[in-house]
Structures are given as structure tokens and as C-alpha cells.
Length: 276
Image: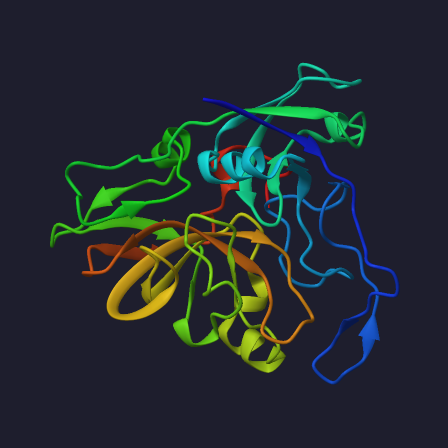
């Protein structure tokens, strides 16, 4: 189905400060608009920004149409610029946050205007694999499914490479949302822990795994469950927040296995941006 949104403008509330855990208030860029220098494949940490969204952020002004944009679009869907100087240019959906996130080549970003219409060929909602009925897929297009390098483990489980594993103990804001909508932030305030676990090396677009995370109807703890997600936005200074991960698949019964492979990133799978 065709759904559409419009390139959104960055917005700030008057006098709005974002606070570090120690109370220091700052005003930082991050969400919405066209982000010229952040792309999938780039680091999720280290930006002078908060919740940095890579590429182009789009939304629809009608609430119900915006919900359709969020719920029907999947990672890997094709996006087409319908208006403006870049009319006809093609891009790829890379995730969703408060806005739907789309990657275009740099020369297209340079020509985009706030308000340009972007149409998405939404395909993938309800996708399933008959041979792995215990695994529920979310936000996964056929294009992404084919790119994930899926295989069958010796015990019959679905197996795939992931760039990093996140411990369930650090998963924070977003647990209250249903797992078809937006994302969940990992809690990155303990910088020493982030470095010790190597999480501070995570990249936008990384495929990640979380053990004991059941993402069927929300994002909750369940012993033995495994969920697979994608890193869709950058780090945050806010308490309880950090880089965001969006659910791609979940199994409550241990039917997913994974192995660590640093190349498991959609920048490599879809050839978005420079090779990292």
C-alpha cells in the first residue's frame, strides 16, 4: 500500500533545556528535519546532539494518516520524493522514532525542502515464516528479510548475525509502548559500563539482540525469550534514555539464536552511506 509523509521541520519548545543526570541543562539539536551529517552506519554515540535521527524525518499532519505511516511502513521499504527539487529520487526506510526515518543519497538531501512529500511503498506488515512459526516479525520488509542472512540452527531455531548484544538490564524508556510503534531506548547514563561492554561502539543501523526480552505485545522481561531489533537513533543525555532500538522480531520460547558479526548493519545490507 502507498502511505505518505512530509519532510518535517525541527521543533523546540521555548526555553527548552535537556538535562544531564547531574542537572546541567543544555539545548541540543537532534530530532526531525533533514540531518546532513548523520547516516546509518555512523556511530550512535559521540554526537553533540540528543536522540539524533539519521537522514530524513517525515510525518503526516493528519493523526490517523500518521499512524498508518508508522504502523504500515517497514525497514527496507522504498521511498520516493513526490514534490520539490528532488522529485523522483528514491530512498529507503531505515526505522521509526517520533517520525519515520528515510535514507536518501547526500545529493538528494541537499535538494530536499521542509514540506516535500515522500511516498512509501509499504510492504511487510504481517510477514511470517511458515518454518519458524514461533518467531513473530515486526517492521520487517521482504527486502530486509532477505538481507538478514537467516539460517536454521542445529536445534531448529532461527539463526542470524547481529552486530551487538544488549543486556536486558539497561533497556529503558519505550517499554511502555507497544512493540509495533516507535522504539525503546537503552539507558546509557553509566558511561563506564557502556565502554566496558563495548556498547559505546554501537552504530546507527546495527542489528542487535536482547536476551530475556519479549517484544510480542510490548517490551517486557521473559526468561528465555529473545528479541532482535535495529538501532535507529543516536544517544541521549536524558536519564533513562540513550540510543533507540526498534523491534524486528521476537520469540518467547528460545526459537532465535544469534552470533556476533560487526558487519550486521543495514548500511552494508542496503548500501546506504559510506562503508563503515
